[in-house]
Image (tube, rainbow, N blue to C red):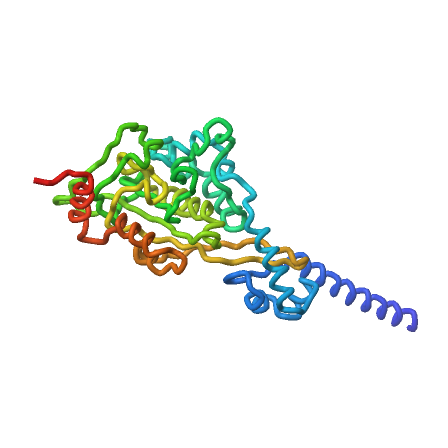
Length: 346
């Protein structure tokens, strides 16, 4: 009886230890806590608790914790993959797509051929595996070795988009998707997008909106310099242009003379542009490692949203409103555009 009881006792102790060990291992393996908002001690405390955070960071001093978090979050926001690499098609294909060409824009479904969900399957795969947790760097793919600023869509001279707004505009949809526009096209100075439209001479377009409304669909996102939105802007481009607009909604075809996607400065004057906003977030695991966690939300109309940005100047806000002029303002904006170039409408 004693031997049996002892065996049962040892068996019970072993079982309890095994269960506890299994629980601890599982907890250690699976802990990857979401942190909502900016990289601050208060947000991380809210996510994991102050005691746990002190253990993970090795200090309970709030100032020291913030310094450590700043370093870890900055490291998490460093680009780790070229945007070109994500789609596995090379720089020429991506540049062509962003200008409004490529099979993604040009192909039309024919039976079982040219099905977008198959032709652009890489988009959905990358979106589900990397887009929210891996920082995409500026598209290059080795092109800058021979062609500096090859991805001219995102540069004005040597600077990236000066207004901090990247926009995509479409005029059609493919694979049976219904095209529904949200903006009128007013006018376009094509000189700023010469490396997309391949027109070297000074040129412009004046669009006739008579009897036609919402001929195009535009969406855009904005960011302030050195902000979270700035760090993740090419993730936002992937989310907006390739996942939402192309893969999900089948939107294709650029406004003639303009890039499909580019700095707002290169895009046409339009009445409206849907606004997409990157939402800041992080994850922290049981070792204290911090990674990024990006989500996106609708922020209304871009011109209205841009006006709320504290770190954009009144001059920048003026120029954004000159590019996104508001419903009913297209004719006046187009006339002003032509008058500035010494043309008048008779």
